[in-house]
Image (cartoon, rainbow, N blue to C red; front, top):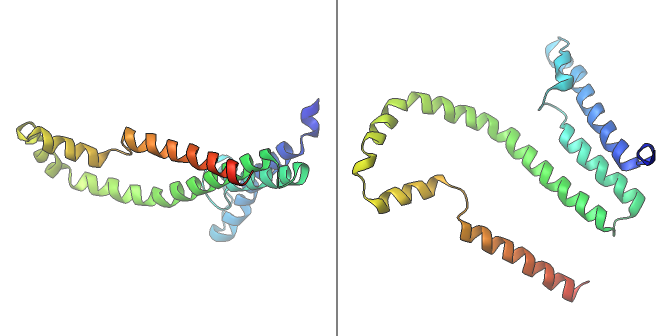
Length: 158
């Protein structure tokens, strides 16, 4: 029954519950309609993702201190979650705009695909590279940089 005494867990769960619940009266103020589906929906104000990770991080700080390893894990986890939540929410509208533009440009795109087999191999590779994320070498050196920086910090500071 240790789980009943896990303050960080309960703080984070409460934050999620509260953030989801408060969306209902906030939406009512804006629309003058109760929308109970907001309790289980994603998005909206406030972010239950951010509430959860900041509650978790704060509770861990209170229980284990700001110098603990678990606080560091929670803080970085929280930063990543909030950064991604912000980016995803903001870019969702951009994606809708782009999708609408793709529908409008579909006929032009079909014409370009018909000419694809006639293109040189170097031209094809260049176009595909622009559509992809990081290349494997970029990922490798990013990982290597993270490891080396951590080893240096450990050597000089820790």
